[in-house]
Image (cartoon, rainbow, N blue to C red; front, side, top):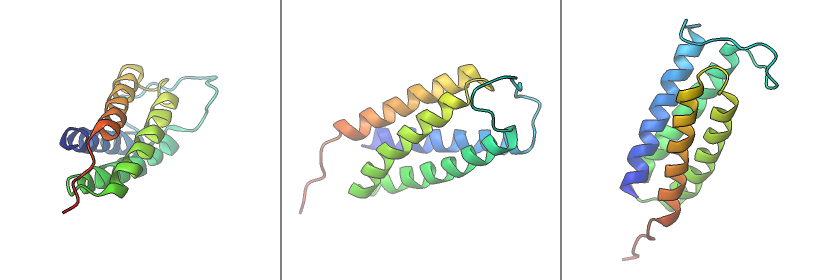
Length: 118
């Protein structure tokens, strides 16, 4: 569970930084024309910024062992996978890396043993 929490906080911070960079219209991103999911770079930046904040907060809540955080974490990691899939034209290698990290988060949250009731 700690593994999933650490990776989730890392993933959230990376999404947050990517969102800030996209909102600031950084020159790092390459705008691709004629892509099916056309949202401007600032729109994607806001999506990643909000998702990054929520993922980071949920990852921090995982350190307490909250069951709700496990359920929400699996859902947020799935949403992050979808968002990063649609983010592929802007940063292909980074998006693929974050998709793999999100898969590790889902795996870690699903295989972690239940907390013992005292």
